[in-house]
Every structure is written in C-alpha cells, then in structure tokens.
Length: 235
Length: 328
Ligand SMILES: Nc1ncnc2c1ncn2[C@@H]1O[C@H](COP(=O)(O)OP(=O)(O)OP(=O)(O)O)[C@@H](O)[C@H]1O
Ligand SMILES: [Mg+2]
Image (cartoon, rainbow over all chains, first blue to last red; front, side, top):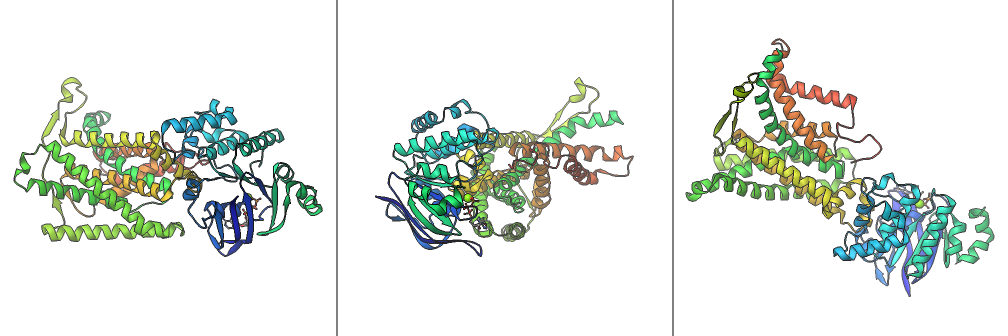
C-alpha cells in the first residue's frame, strides 16, 4: 500500500523555484531515501510534504488522502513526523519539555509517560539528561532528542532530514541502527541524506534529486552501484 | 543631603512600588508579544488605557444601579477586573487577527507602523465613546479603597519620615503580584505555557510538534492584553482620573521596563518594571536635592531614560537578558 505519493510538485521561495515537478512514492514499511547535493531541493521536498513550504503546483497524497498545503500541525496530527535539518531542538527547554512538546496533542498523562519510556528504550541517554537544557547537549544527543521528540506522536511516516549531519562516524552508525529498528517496528521512513553511502545501505529504494528534479531512481543496491551516483555522491 | 534622602525613602518606596507594579504588568504584555513575534506592539499601552475605561465604566454602571453601593468594594473590584480582563483580552486577540496576522510575513517595519496606527484608532475610539456617554472624555471613576493611612515609620526609626498611602496601594500591589506569579507559573509549568516558549524559540519546529501556532499566538495576545487591561483598572482606582492618552507615556515607560529587564524575558520585564517605578519615584523626590535645585521633579522621566541608556550601553541584552546566542 502506498503511504505517500508525491505528484509533480513545484515549490517556490518567492520567485525562486526550488522544486520543478518532483514525483515519487513511498510504500508502507519501506525505507526510502532521497539523496542529492547541496541546494538540490531535498529539504524543500520534506517541507512541502509536512506543510512548512507552500506547494504551487502538483499534489501530495498521504494514505490516498490529498494533503497538499495542509498546515504543519495538521500533517503531524495525521501521523507524519518531520525531523528537520539541523535538529532544531528548543534550546531553552529541558530534554523533558522538548519531549512533552513532541507529545503536544497526545491526551493523557499515562499515555505520554508510556511513550516517553518507549523513547528511552531507543535513547537511554535522554533519560539521564531529562532536566538538561536541550541547547547544552552535544550534537549527537540533540539528534537523538530530535528523533525521540518526533516519536512521541507515534508517527506512521517518519521523515528525517540529514540525521547524520555533523556527527562522528560512530554516532552516525548508532543513529542509522536505530532508524532500522524503528522501521522494523513498522514505521515507514523517508530519509534525506547527503551521506549517500550510509543512506543507500539501509534503504529499500532511493531517489536522486538534482536541481529540483528527480533524475534517477532504483533500489538501494542499484543506486549504490550506479556509475553516475558513485561518481557524484560516493566519491 | 544623604539624611534628607533617607527621610523620604519610605514614601519613595511605597510610591515606587505602586507605579512599578503597574509598569511591570504592562511590560509583560510587551515582552510576551515581542518574544513570540519580534513585534513591538505599540497598541499595548492603549489596551491598558482601554482597560482603565472599561473598568471605570463597569464600576460606574454597577454603582449607578441603586443596590450597587451595598456591594462590598472588594467584590466590585473583582467584577470590574474580570470583565475588563475578558474584554481587553478579546480586544488584543482581535487586533492580532485583523491587524498583525495579515502582515506577519511582511518586513517588520510594516507591522510596527500598523501597531502605531492601531494605537491611534484605540485612542480616538475610546475618546469618542467616552465623550458620547459622559459628555467629557476625561473621566473620574468612583473612589474605592481611597482611605488614607499614615505609617508612623519615624516613631520606630527616627531617620525616616512618616509615609502615607491609600488603601488601594495594597490592592494594586497584591493584584499585580498575583497576576505576575500566575503568569510565571502558567508560562513555566503548564503545557500551553511551554508551547508559548516553544513558539517563541522556533515557530516552524513548534508547528511540526502539532502545535497550532496561530492559536498559541492568539492566546499570547489574549493573556498579555487581559493583564494589561486589568492593570488599567488598578491604575484608575489608584490615581482616580483617566484620559485616552494615559496609555501613551505609560506604554513607553513599560516598554522601557521590558527592555531594561531584557526584552522577551518575562521575569526581566517584572524586574524592570519595579526597578523603573522605584527609580522614577526616587528621582522625583530627590532630583532637586541632588542637583542643587537645577533639575526639579519634572525631570524624573529624563532620569529614567538616562538609566535606560546606561543599561543599554553596558548590558544591551537587558539586566536579566541572555547574551546574544539565544533569543527569548
Ligand atoms: N527559505 C528560503 N528562501 C529562499 N530560497 C530558499 C530557501 N530555502 C531554500 N531555498 C533554495 O531552494 C533550493 C533548495 O534548497 P533545499 O534547502 O531544499 O536544498 P537541500 O537539498 O536540502 O540542500 P542541503 O543539502 O544543503 O540541505 C536552494 O537553491 C536554496 O537556495
Ligand atoms: Mg537540506
């Protein structure tokens, strides 16, 4: 079953056209990665889906329902969690408050507690740091918090924008391991990465985006072995 | 000279706390809106003024109903505060909806000028309505809690003079402190309060947390404006006579208080408010003494502004503000 269907979307920032007709799908249970170089339009694609960027043309279907230009808080309520580029932790809020904000629309103290415990099974470090200000955590810890915060909504579709950015290889390894675990738990994943090698190694399928257009697609393995991809992104 | 300054100190503190608590609560409105929208909501002073009129109207209407005078003053006050807070809260929310939201994405100057425009509209609307209803836009409310008390400070500490105050001093101070403590609790300890802080830090990410950002902004305006309006009622009770222009200079002072404390910082605004009130009253009592009669009490505002400039020179982020790296 198709969880996400992006049909020929065009997105502008003022007069600048960032997406020039992007199309792709994500099936339930998949890890799909979107790779491309700086400024290719990866983040804009995620923002268009979650509602942070306004789509001018085209349509986005989620579980068959048209969600084009729904507001960001609405798409989150529908089960799409977007972990933005650069983690965007609420710096002056504690780890606990950050997680509580992640569960903003979740009703019931007990349910929230339970979800928080669930997040701690993936990221035990967060439990130790409950009362630390988010802004004072290390880059890796912040990435864990950003993902943990997104999990508080128990998303159906988790969109991650460059989770490996600026992290040491060992931490990247951990984060990708957790992405795999989350996928095994049934969460569909849309992963944006510049770290193409890592991303393609865990993804079922991938798309290559260039200058606001999808230029190549295939399974993770196919793309990893593709000469053009190797040359451009795996060098 | 020092002795003379000491003598007037008890009175300076009482007057300073009264004025300071008014500044402090009004400053909260500026700081909250600035924190969440980076907008200097110039109309906030006029919300305060409108509150003073609404509260006075409520009091006059109830007292005019015959049985009104049998209602205890405290109950009257509570009724006036609640009705006013509701009205000005909705007014603030309405202003945000029709005047600020449409220009939220425009350059900041646009919103600033819009705010100035809203100020003028409120001044004139209140003036016209007051004039139609009472024949004069300068209104004197009923006197509540106006009993004078003298605190015989001198009898136990002879360096001080006696201080005198109206009973309303306690009302103003207690209500203002109550409002500040509740707000501080709300913002720091509740879910919606935390959401206000989250939206202030990062609006986009807050939206990704399923927070309805427009709703949070509306709530912020409601709270800031209802506190500001209620403070207007306290002001009217304490100082008696009101006109449609009281919000202008008071708004500027409260804004200064917010900047002094660190704009965007809620505790900073409270601190700044009290500090400014005390400084102003100190200046008004002692300026002529300090300058050998060259500057009189009427220069107290200059003194206040000079302090502001000093604060901005040496601690531009405000007394309780955090240095550059983080906003709010
Ligand atoms: N807020 C913005 N205002 C104007 N232009 C923008 C904005 N955000 C992105 N762009 C432009 O849109 C294009 C796509 O940007 P986008 O952030 O989607 O790229 P990306 O693939 O995520 O790049 P990176 O790997 O560097 O994060 C770029 O040309 C960029 O300059
Ligand atoms: Mg990006």
